[in-house]
Length: 279
Image (tube, rainbow, N blue to C red):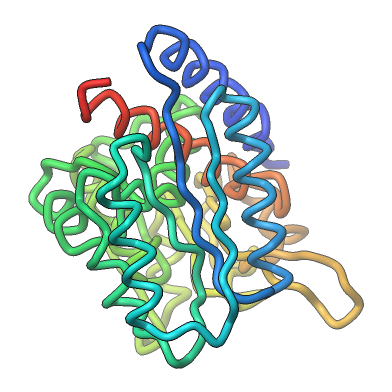
């Protein structure tokens, strides 16, 4: 049976380290969270971030806006936060309503305050191996891999999913750590053949059962980024946990694996933003 990678425990350690860094600063780091509308899932995510801020000693400033807000009005809100020296990090909770272009909003956040790491500047720096703010979920995945003690250098890592939020940045981070990286996606033929070659397998496609036990190399490290709610209400990942856990060497649970790490790494980015702004 695979060893469970306890994301909650690793995240707790990161939060404690962030709190120590905060205590050495002259000012309290401030994270501004902008939420548009009343998406129930988004509300849960934002509440989790607010709780983590409190635990890390970071001020959290939440702005809740009507779902009918125009793109220009939302830009005004972001620009005001850009110009506020008391705000060190800005996070616009996604998804946004259909009348708003998410790329326009993300691109409007100052690179020095882009703690989500989604802007073209952040992505570009990451792709050339000189990262500033790394997307929190991607960073969390790599920290979980490192927590196993399995060396990344020289290993074959297969990333299933090519999103800008997880797949691409995870691939860049693993390359930076000298893994040989293969990226698979919805158009990949014979996914099972690639997955079976992986010493490290990261799955982020948003589809339950994408990876089963027969697709995994014995002893592999499996990081399941998926969070899917089944009709009965239960939460599962993209990996069939029961079959894969019998083959893998290490595996993340869902929930309790990558999720807590995303929030912890966001806190790490926020305190770094404060430090970088000379506070």
